[in-house]
Image 1: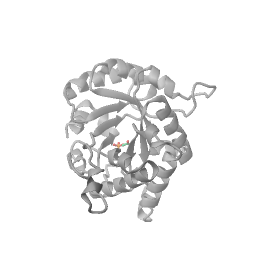
Image 2: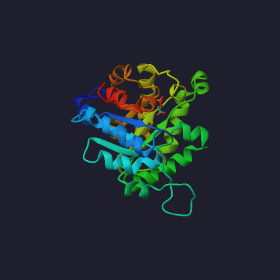
Image 3: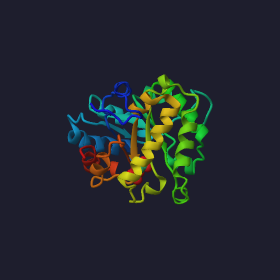
Image 4: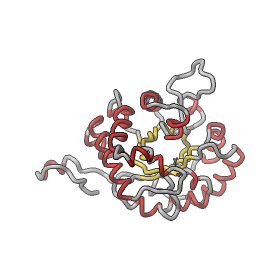
Length: 269
Ligand code: PGA
């Protein structure tokens, strides 16, 4: 247990902010890779590698069609299964969509929301992210909300503005009690799938901004407990350095989560 830096110097102010360390979450985002058969084969190799690992929470988010197989194959293990997206509506006439109730029905516990590929290629706006976040929280899923700037925004010095806007609008009209399970992932878009990683300092700076927005929306205590993951070219050889940062509460891993050995090495950074 330790004290986070608090403004002011009176000991009582520190006492009010005593908290447990945040347990890290290592999540794999498989994107549009693997069939159900390949999912089962992956888990067959991966589960023994991470058996008994309790230091971090482990989540895998395969494509929708693999969810059922993934839940069955990981039953009783220390690996939770998440979806990569969810519709904000419940059961209704919306061709091609999947509801949070449907995710729960197959044993899914987590869901990624607002990944930059959804924002970039499927026109997902901050308002849609907000609707999806509300739906996931309402259903009892653990949402992993993604935020992050594109390269032009970083180069124009707009990173802070972008992160503030994305967080503010994602968190809008949600109570701290409702948001309790939420996880955020900071994923600079220029680092996703490019082999370029944010330096631990860059990631930490961004996490501080996200945490400050969470404090504005939900209060300081909530923000102190919020897990903020870093995502963008996390690999077995950079995971340890990134995870050593006090501000970084885990990783959202794309490419390197597709191979059981490489994802296990990241989990065991
Ligand atoms: P990457 O993807 O690890 O392949 O860069 C991360 C993500 O998009 O979540």
